[in-house]
Length: 175
Image (cartoon, rainbow, N blue to C red):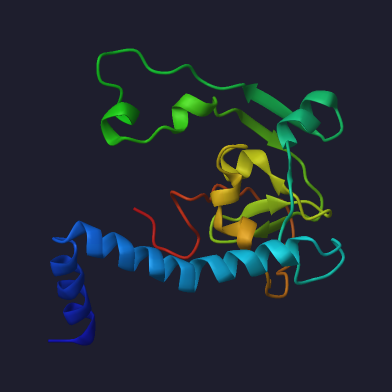
């Protein structure tokens, strides 16, 4: 049996004792997750011109298009929640439709920086675009919001459209 299978079978047995499992899970979080988050939050305090600073804050590209600050067009401000007894989001337990409608629009962004697995748009002030990170309730959970070191940028000639997201990341095959 491989080490991975041994570890997974140990975890399966441990889950049968909820108190022990939750205590060990808390210890793991304190030891591994929180120090990384504290470091990222400390780096977030650095000025925007420092290359290793993760994004801080957010901006709305939709508002920039609405006010004319950015060239673009709004096709739809969002769709209503579906009717019926059992909407798919309720069955799946996903609550994204309860927070906001998802607008359909395009915008022309010069020298766009797309970071993370979901290619989230980040502006020159290192702020995350709300629409590319699922809104103000979810942008802090986006992996790009914790990205510290970025590889050298790849320059793409011509016009491009990004349709990558949490649900369809750029580092995995698509369906």
